[in-house]
Image (cartoon, rainbow over all chains, first blue to last red; front, side, top):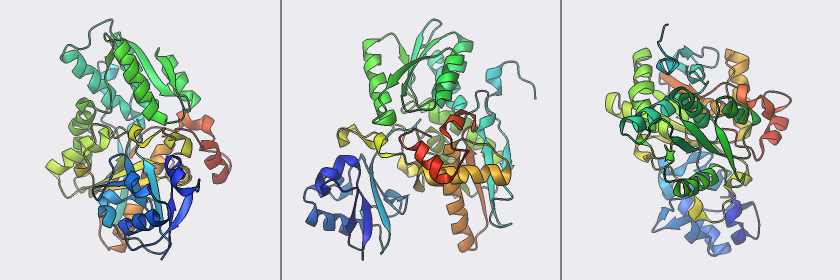
Length: 90
Length: 315
């Protein structure tokens, strides 16, 4: 099971500059743990006490995971996971 | 329809069916035409309400200077109200916004302070907060945290929609300050709680997310995630494609953020069709396409339009 994980500029120090990396797992949490095994340090930038950090948004196929089960949101082969910092609109 | 003053004509916008974009007779799309407000965007509602509330509580009095961080529409709305009421307006605006927004702000007499493109509206907020500290006599209405922004939609946008379409099942709007979704969301939670509230959030190019550190991230103080049920991130390609479909099929010339909202609304419509449920889905047309002609969103191929929007704050 592989998903594509898109990494924002600010976190590419953990992925040797890669804009997107492969991730494995059945949930967002498992994918993040998988990323941590190859890109040490990235997990604590994304999650805190088991939840997404306040200024981090994660989308599976463009839908915000906070409304689909949080880090327990399921992912499947071929899904795209986008990680973005929260920004203002208006 | 007759009004004594332009400001009295804000709101009460038409709700029109989208019969050619609706997927079936049982799953219908409806558009709330907020471009028909006096300055051509939904922001007239929030701007008027924020200003009136500040006058009521005594923070604003004639001769005051108003300061606001804005990517454009709120500034344009505030400039119109400020001109009528006699205030000076200073807008802090990211430099990667369309030329038309600058021209319109100038037309209504607002002064513009540029904030850096990198970081987008986050930077505009940061710069404006710095200026507010330097000028304690200026009044920052601060759309991201001002309850009057959401109250405008709770008191007007939500009730107008429910009166026009009592069978509404979904409301889809853009997520920027979150004012529209918070106000309309709260209204429906209280008056018709089975209505699903769906947010469409623009996804920009990398430049806009180029923060120096994650602690510079920004979530508007108004935002309460319990008032929405789903949130979609929509990139420029889908937004432009849908903006053009709305024009081609329904004849509505809308801005690019409306395309992002239509994209989320059509996804919702497809879900309802698959579930064999009937649905009345209301989406917001935030503004017309006039202010975005120079971005090239309406000409050439989708690829070309997408390339031209890279790095722009298009919503």
